[in-house]
Image (cartoon, rainbow, N blue to C red; front, side, top):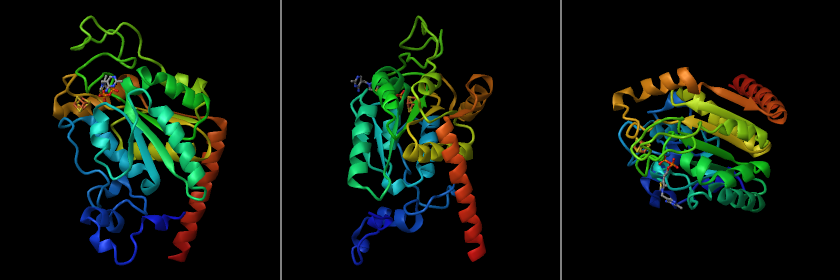
Length: 294
Ligand SMILES: Cc1ncc(C[n+]2csc(CCOP(=O)(O)OP(=O)(O)O)c2C)c(N)n1
Ligand code: SF4
C-alpha cells in the first residue's frame, strides 16, 4: 500500500465530488498543512452544528490540521458534543458505544496493522471527559496497560455538555451546575498521573490557547503512538453553555484557566523521548537536504 491509494484513477477524478477533488488538489490529503496556512487551503472539516463559539470546535479543527497523515487516519469517538463536529470531517469515523471507544480502537488498530503492513494507519480516539474518564474509564486504562499503539484525546470541558450539565470525574470539586445542584463531591481525576502509571509513552495537558502548540502536540502524540506506544492528550475545551462563558470571552477563559490551574505539561517515557529526539534529528537532516536541492 502506498500514498497513491488516495489518488483517483485517471479519468475518474472529474466524477468525484468537487469537495473531494479539492481535498487532494488544494487540501490536506497527501501533504501536511500548517496552522499558519489556515484560511488558505481546503480544510478537512469546514462546518459543524455545535454551539457558536464553543472552544471544542476550534480544538477539533486544529486536530484535523495537525494529524500527520490524514488520509490514513481513522477517528474513533462516541456520544457527546465533539462527535457532532468530528463526524463532519473528511476522515473515517467509527462510533463506539458510549464507554467502548478504546476497546473499539484497539481492534481497529490491530486489524489495520495486519491488513496494511507497509502503510502506517493511525487510529485516534477523540471523545469527552464523560466518555473517557467515567463511562469508558476501564477500556481507556486497559488499552494503556496493553500498550495499544494509538492516541487518546480527551476533550475535557469538565462537564457532560451534550446532556445538559451533569458533573463528570473531570469536573472540579465543589462545582455547582444545572444537573449537579449540590456540587461536585470529589477532586478532578488525575488522568495524566494515571496514564503515566499505566505506562503511556507520551502525555500532554493543553488548553485551546496556542494553535501552533496544539498542532505540534497532536502531531507528536500520533507519531509517538505509531512507533512507541499509547499516547494521551487532555485538552481543556470549555463548555460556554454549561459554564455560562459569554461567547466573546471563550478564549480569555481558556487563557485564564491555563494560567491559573490547567497549565501546559508534557511527559515522555524514556523510550518515547529517545525516539522523538532521533526522529527530530532525522527531520532536520531531511529539511537541510531538501534546501540544498532547491
Ligand atoms: C450508553 C450511553 N449512556 C448514556 C448516553 C447519553 N449521553 C449522550 S452524550 C452524553 C454526555 C457526554 O458527555 P461527555 O462525554 O463529557 O462529552 P461532552 O458532551 O461534554 O462533550 C451522555 C451521557 C449514551 N448516548 N449512551
Ligand atoms: S453544550 Fe458546551 S461543549 Fe457542547 S457544543 Fe455547546 S458549548 Fe460546546
